[in-house]
Length: 610
Image (cartoon, rainbow, N blue to C red; front, side, top):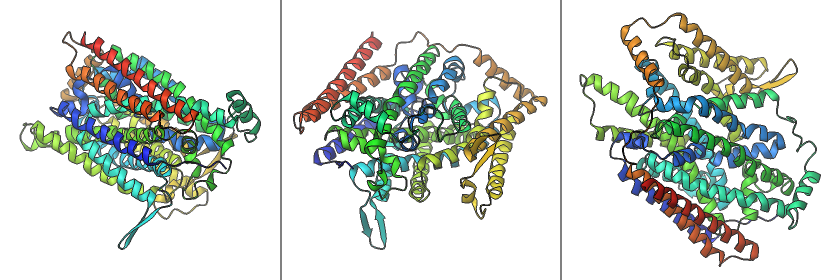
């Protein structure tokens, strides 16, 4: 097995410098947040290019380089069907949902529920959305720490604090969680979007390096030989583009899940309605569709190379519950030179922090705008609380949810693969919750209570079916955790498990209940008037007014250009301290690439100014 490098002193300096720079961005851009609309919506002035990149990166963090890499390492070429699924999902945004989200003219994601259904619906969704998303954030922090602790070499470390002993992995979880909370509370959507853009630049440069050099390594200096060796040395059936170990129903369910996730998930809607002109939503969806097809291939193929280079990856990472999830990390530690390796670890760290920031931001927006403000208005007889008070409530919400997510992430290492955890949690709630959102934006004949009934019945039936499946398989059902037990079934020759069952049951039951409720239309005039107002807005284009481009939009381009330029200059300088011609070449070319991105965003800034 090849010997991997870990971060050295140069890399640690780069990591500290990078995180300090990103934290500085949070502090600098915090002045953009004059009110809650700026904090939760970027004032509706987010440039579409930055919003597009943020939209894509928010779903492309450490999860792709850890959980999805582990899945690819185990299943081979059939993973391509899975992780290019966002390509198809974004076309729904191009034709339908992008413009609809912009036309809603809302300030927080769940405000659409108030406009489409009722304030009670928003209260209900706020309760059922917080718990699964706290678990998902715990999963995100967990997957991120697999990458970072592996790269830093902290996995086997143990530190004792009196009566408490923590592993290096647990220390990484806590440390990253604390940094995440500090950054999240300071930032708003402006900070999230700008740092997302910087992460995209670095992640693009990383994959652009790992892709060719992984094949060059496998081919002893020849890319073509590397391709040949992969074809000859991969396990039997590994490169077969049939479904292999993955069932057709599993892939179909994953595509359906992403159709929801990339169109009506709350942070997706937030990106669409935070730009000035609905015509730009088509550009956003198109750009993300292209990224969704090309970017996964740039890391899927190297991970398949990793299967040949590291045939027994468990011996490399014995401390990890799912060692295959460190396959892409292993390639980075094998191929990338010191200096750039520090930048990559920092980028994935910050990208995942930004992804968490996105979720925390919309959760805080929901709790503040859709729960706290309406309740305070009732208590104060129609008077809204001060905007400063709302901002404090939002930040305290972020802090509380963040602490819970960190606590939950500490337990995930005892469960198993983070990919499996993510699918189990997501599939049990997503279809039932988002059917009323996805259908409700295009079909507006159901009453004010239809979303509550639809989501309640859909999730209840899904939960019951999970319990029945566990018992039917002869497994114990002694607690809530047993509901997540792995079970496999066969139906008409098709293999399926709980994930596929959850998607199918949640979708069909919820859709049936949703359309059935249309038999009892709204009768109160207030409900009829509210729905009529939304209907008018959804049919009225939301184009940008003739006002000048917001100064903050121009500055956001300039900040990205500055940050990319600093990273580029740093890598060029580090290239002269590299060991060997290949390390020099990688650091130097990636530095030039970052400088070219800097020039591009300066051009965008100049054009926006004009």
